[in-house]
Length: 286
Image 1: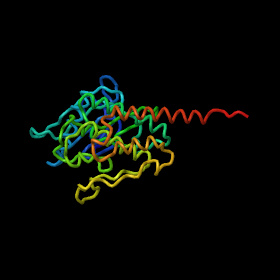
Image 2: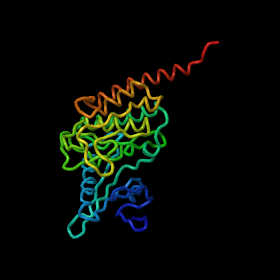
Image 3: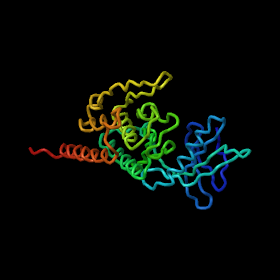
Image 4: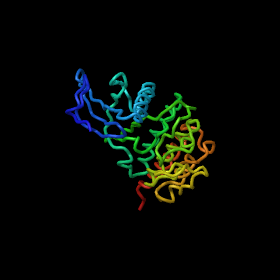
């Protein structure tokens, strides 16, 4: 693994190691000229099959550079490092986002879940409006800062609406059937991933999908039905449980048409939940 002593980035001072992923490491860096702090993602190609990780890093930069939304992490610069005329490393200079993912620190209250997912939903709707599908929404890609700031932090698998991926991309617990079957992706793919992420956040359990986690064949017979969230967690309102179940329907045509519809329903649910909570807080006459 890289260390702060061995990793050198011209123009930047390496401050702190933040984490690692598939063929990548994340660092906090400081720009020497301005003193501004950023996150740096270093992606290294160690063997031929690692080319896909470089492709995802390039894709993240190309998509993020066309977006400007406060909930979506900004990617400012891309640098390539070559060896014998072949790109061996990619460095992404990104917005530094403090906090924890909701996978690492799930919100404990329904109202906080609604707040976070409303912000995520609005950001996904913005992406879709500009012609992009996120295609990998999951709890580990949603970060919440100490002050409550919400950030979507990974666009590596994002693509244009209507694109068909050459290989299966996605996370087994949150992947939509059309991703597994390599069919064209559209906003209803984000609706499914969003709903699966919301299900996990409300229940602590993943939904069943058609992509096996450890070997085995893809099930073409459809997915087993998930237990509605309100039957797993009694604090989940029935209206929110229904929205989640509508989002994760196997057939795209059966889901909400787009994230705007999902956000609209979340706003109605949020109003009802807050109204109910405020009513409970009213002092009782004696």
